[in-house]
Structure formats: structure tokens, C-alpha cells
Image (cartoon, rainbow, N blue to C red; front, top):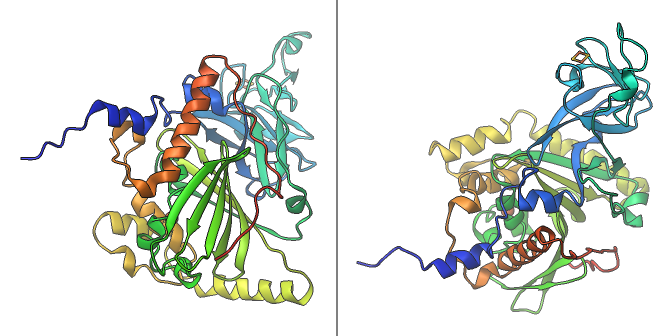
Amino acid sequence: MQSTERPARIAANAHHGADLSHTGPDTPAGRYYRRFWVPVAELESIKPGRGKSVVVMGERVTVYRGESGVPHVIANLCAHRGTRLSTGWIEGECIRCVYHGWLYDAQGQCVEQPGETAGFADKIRVRSYPTQSWVGLIFAYFGEDEPPPLPQPGEWQKASLVENRNYLRQSNYLNSRENGSDWLHVRFTHRRSAFTDAGFNREIPEYDAVETDYGIRGYTRFSDGKYNVHHILLPFMSYNIIFDDVAGWVKQLGWRIPIDDENTQNYTVRLIEKSGPDLDRYLEDRQRYRDAAKDLPPAQFYVDACLNGEMHVDEVPLHHPQLVNIQDAVVLNAQPALHDRDDRLGRSDVEVILLRKLLAREIQANELNQPVKSWQWTEEQVVETGI
Ligand code: FES
Ligand SMILES: [Fe+2]
């Protein structure tokens, strides 16, 4: 009988000797990731003058928008007796606790304490996090030191229309990250999808991946000479030219952010480069596309039905706007986190292997207080190609 036991050497190589999948504040990966800006919510999901509580990398924080609409991120709990600040009232750019009315400014400084002696408020401050918004997302910096600049390429700044999509995956973030570096799965998981219309599924191409100034440049090469290039902008982002059901080929930025070690928030932003009558036509087509799907059950219904064996993923309606997401969720939600499994990687996993290797290298350098790579990218570096 063949042994299913794996040599320890291979297992260690699959992880490159580092814990990549836990991201809480007291973990090596968590400490590394806290050196970079992280999206924490869609701007539109919080109205000016409202707040909400979100979890990012195992850390719960308060995200609110002042009455001006400017977003702020501060600690989860009130310093007085620890209730959740997001349930309070926004006053100007400050937030007032719903329990006994302590008022905090956007830097977390307590500025008013009803019923307390003067001077006590000056001594009270909760943590605040540097906050910015860009392409419809609110970003926060969770590190203790000065944040690096938030990469904001001009083309995306000037865009007349960006479309935000965001969805939760019940899966460790690394599964989602690796899925974005895994192009063979498109041929199987997404064989009924816009990827097929775009020509991705006509054959199994060759895959390659190289390290760059910004992260990873991945290649998918077909036997007729056509090829596709995609980009991993380390540590969190991806940049792809993807085929959208309505808009055709579009540029897409993506972030896969750990909520905790079991859940991942996926944010994508698509750049719609249309204007005038073309843009009007596009918006009408987009509305028609939405209307055609408005009576369909939500994505989670199909994901659960497929995982429970009540449906095959091939039976999900082709016009479901979340078709690709559903197909990926069926795969990823069933996949244990990397620390709970033992992969057997092959040639087609070339980009997954490189991704793990680079993350492990940087996380280990950070743990040893050695310099980490300063990932730099510009629009020009990430050259677009379709197939
Ligand atoms: S718990 Fe917030 S003011 Fe008392
Ligand atoms: Fe996928």
C-alpha cells in the first residue's frame, strides 16, 4: 500500500517556514501587514454622520464619517466603561459614546465628559488610526509608526466612473490571495463564465511568474502566441485586466483583506473608461443586467446549496451577476486554511509558490528587524494586456 505520509521537507517548503495564514496583532504576518494601508470599508456603506464597527486582521475598530463626510477610524471601545463607540452619535467630526456621553475627536482625544471634573478628559485618549479614502474605499493604517504613502495612481484618481464590489468569503484570506494567483482553476472552476467568452478556456496555457519592484508579474501564455499578464501588488493588492459581462475588458484593482483567520473581505474596483454617449449606453446596459438578476437568490444561497450537495455549481444560472464569485466561494469556503493542510504543489502552482516565498521572506525579515522590501508600483509598470 502506498504511504500517504509526506516528507517533512516538502511540507516545510509549501509554507516556506513561516506562518502565513494567521494575521492577528500578535502574529508575524499580522505585524508585517500592519506596515501597510488596508481598506476597511466601502465609503458608500457608511453615510456621513454614521459609524460602524468592523473587524480587520482580528482587530475590531470604529469606522465613522464626520458630518462633513470625511472618514475616521478610531478604537472599538470607549475608555470609560468599554461600550462600543460605533453605536454612538456623530457630532461634527467627533463621536459621542451612547452610554454616558463621553465625546472623542477624530484623533481619539476625549474632549468632553458630562458629570466629570474639569481636566479629566485631557488625560483620556483612545487609539486612532491614520485614515484616507480613495476609489470609493476607506483605508486605515494599523501600524504604530508613520504610514508610507498610499499608492494612488493618477489614472484611477481621474476616473469618471469606478465600480466597487465587495463580498465576504468564509475562508482564510490566504486561500483567496492564492486563488488570484492560480490561473489553472479558471479552466475548471469557471468553465461556465465570462472567462470562456474572453477566450481563456480554449486550452491549458503555460504559466510563469517573476518577482518585480511591485510584487509579482504573472504570465499566462497560449500556444498561438497570445498571452495575458496580471500583477500582484504586494502585500495586499492585485491589478488585472479582466473581462466584465457588460463593460468588456476593464482594469481591476483587488484587495483580499483578512477579517479574522476564518473570513476574508474581498474588495474590487473596476475602472470604466467610457464617456459621453458610450457611458450613457453602458449605464443603461448595466441597469438591464441588474434588472435581469433582481429576483435571483443571493450568492450565499447557491454557495450553501453546492456545499451541501443539493446543487452542482454547473446549475447556478449563467446570468447570476455573482457567478464567478459563487464558483470561487464553493472552492474556497471548503478549503481549510494553509496551517491546517498539507499541499502538494506542482508546476501549475508556480505563482502560488512565488507568492508564499515572497510573503514568507518579508514576514521573516520583519520579525528579525531586517529591512523589508519597499513595494513600488506605477500605472506604467503594470502594462495592460488582453488575450
Ligand atoms: S462607557 Fe462610554 S461614556 Fe461610559
Ligand atoms: Fe476564480
